[in-house]
Length: 178
Image: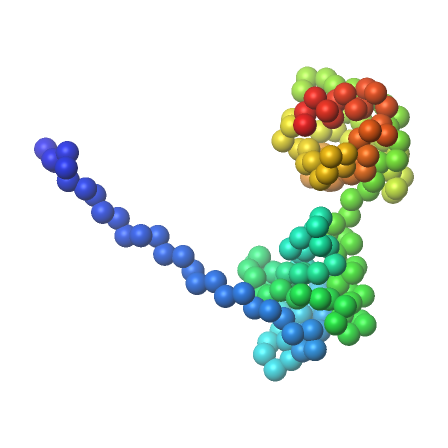
């Protein structure tokens, strides 16, 4: 029988070393090849699939753009994308628009809560939409005191820019879950 004072030792989990690569905009180019975005660092290497993501999507969306390869591993971060060549800036803007596509709700036509799900019929900056959100508490993100981002059952996001401007019923549904 093992003693109560005996300790079991396990090898500590080793972390991969992490090195943040700051991309030099003068040596970095983006090109569209077969629908994919290729990132090339002059004199270094290319990645056939580079996916940009904002490091600070709410507080500083125009700076610090990170790039991931096709396997989701870090390539590097670009501090100021306005320093890229014109075509690279255009491609980056298109990719970020696709990634951060978020229609803004301009009007709520109908809201119904049923069996823990919220059903909204709304007008957005991208046309009318029907939105179903289960477990609103987990799928609602407060961006400011009045601005809210909601993720529906399909992973699509919509933004309510000013909760105070909504009708009383919609306000009540949102405020109950904040």
